[in-house]
Image (cartoon, rainbow, N blue to C red; front, side, top):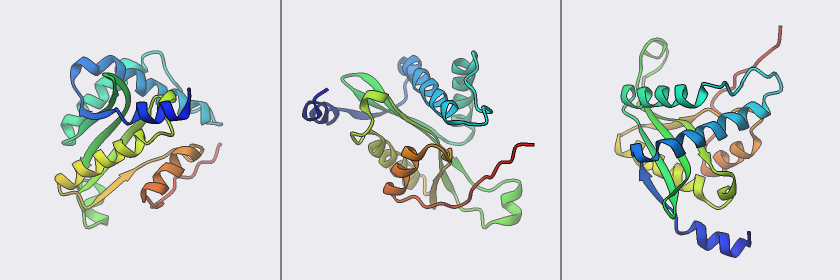
Length: 172
């Protein structure tokens, strides 16, 4: 597609809160994200199981309720082209012993449809998540990014995230 056309096309998208009528499109985006992460996993531990789409959707719905969360969608001409899943954490278990337990906004999933990447959709979704977390009086906004996902890391660093910790792995 022509870049100028795509730029004007992207400017017409809007961010909305999840509604059940968008469930199938939302699930498809989650599958896109899982497939992408699985494709980057040289250890082949992360996979896309046949029941992933429905099971992870149910899991996300339960997590949203459990953690005062929200799902936001990017729409372009009524088509779902991106999503961000927001949860709120504060203390519990180890955190009560080891930290001051600040209220933290956590992004568990962020994905943009392939044809819409690189045009600011993810940044708008991140801004929406940040606004939600500020509204809920969170002190920090965090996420986890798969180490081989270099493009996502670049996006997050450009948005102002910094590395807090790293998980290391060793095959036995």
